[in-house]
Length: 238
Image 1 (cartoon, one colour):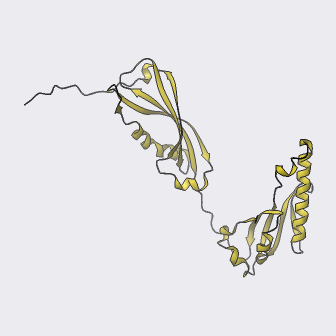
Image 2 (cartoon, rainbow, N blue to C red):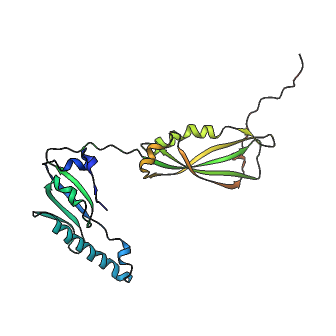
Image 3 (cartoon, rainbow, N blue to C red):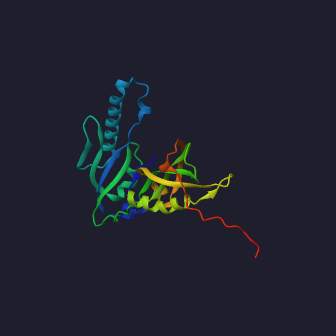
């Protein structure tokens, strides 16, 4: 498998490298062997085997690079890679080395990297809602805990973006007994910034519900809903 290369950071493509005369400071990161390579050995031996495999990959990488000064990354016992200066046009061949997982262009003579584009943040917001039934003041009350994903620069903005949707969510309706019911937002319970990648830019502005759970609790007077209803009027023919 070909190693990863951060060409997009420089506005380059792999096909353009062959014609370039620039030199670059490049960091080569060794491909981690993975646990599958050492499962045949007892647990106490596995980390030593991983280190030995990394040393072998390091020697393979060093032998594949053209002669020149370099900086060893990691330790002698457990190397992590090599940093060195070399012509950019040599990179396509080096990407195919089995010992390498990532090739990172740190500097390119005569070029500046593109300004980084901040990825949109994605927030997982947990909120509680009370299922309130008109004039119900005793017994058990259903509550719902929802988790929603929303794109926002920070946690507070994420919460504010959700509040209008919570108002819509609480729009009353009539149940089979003719009583008004609403799912009333009570409070935010938790928040966590998640690594959503490309999903963050595809979320709807109002957020996306990804989990919901209902529970029961004792209904107290403070949790009851006593809506002010208009006085009933008799209908008379005029």
